[in-house]
Length: 438
Image 1 (cartoon, helix red, strand yellow):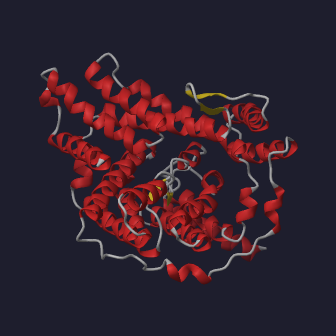
Image 2 (cartoon, helix red, strand yellow):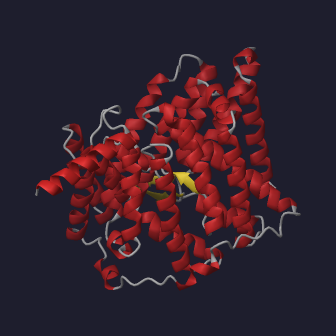
Image 3 (cartoon, helix red, strand yellow):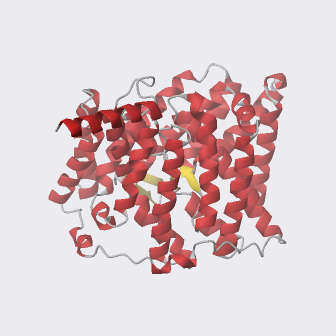
């Protein structure tokens, strides 16, 4: 027993030294719970990403395997390089961009699309290892940073409302409130009723308890599919088709470089906005941003769609995660999860949705820092807040805001308030939309 206690003491000292827990005013237990909570909210990506990538001919099982490998590596980079609580996974939206824009729209093969991911990752990395990342982050007005945070909050809230079945499609109004007696919507409402007092009373592990309680209620209301538990088998045989499968033969075409440019704009500014919006300690931005760029390069090499700063990572931060121990915990959980995919399929979206709704509210609160009494600051922020959830794209919302900012400053004779970087970003985002419409 004494030996065990000594080993635990040594481990705690090492974790403190590696992650500076006392300096960040956190504890090992808080970080572990935050990591587990984050993982539970994002574990769906293991099953979903493979299904999306298989639409372009990538083997489903292999795409599932590479999703886990890249998520593990991304989280390790965040933990060990940046000491950041954010996590990196193949992004929802980024995988759709890979499939529907790079392959279906621009006509690249999926192997050529992987080459575009790799080169865009190199462009991203050059931005992060030079002074450009710091320069860009300093050049962005504070109102825009707060608007990005709030916009991502609305995006996360809408994601929760949609996935939880509370907001559904409507032919006449695009979206509408669901029938609250429908089992998915009812499960979300009941789970939210449990989640709110747990969160407001700051109960340890409140989000994790919420997800487990929601799964139990979902089972009682008949929305949990237990049939997925019948098969836990997985084959690694097909992964060789994806590893180093990137094909540079399309480099001579306009479509290829359009893909690289568009992808670079999306991954650089989407992740910059997400990280500046979610990082509790902004001094970690540079290394966190670098970790993100390295993960995109590795995704191209390993055979995956681009990695992104997961919006669901905000749930871990809301649970108290402040250091790389949060992302380390989440990353380590991806490995055994590969063999337990059916177990995570059991968790209904309605059990996770209330967590996203609450976290969305926490992020939206930064809207109070936007000076709405100044229309030239308010309008670009408003465009971000509106476009992010309605287009279901963080990148599109950021783009509209950055294009609007120099325009409203220019026409009101306040062009001196706009940095050269903001003009350049606006120009490139405008070019991004033009090329995307060709």
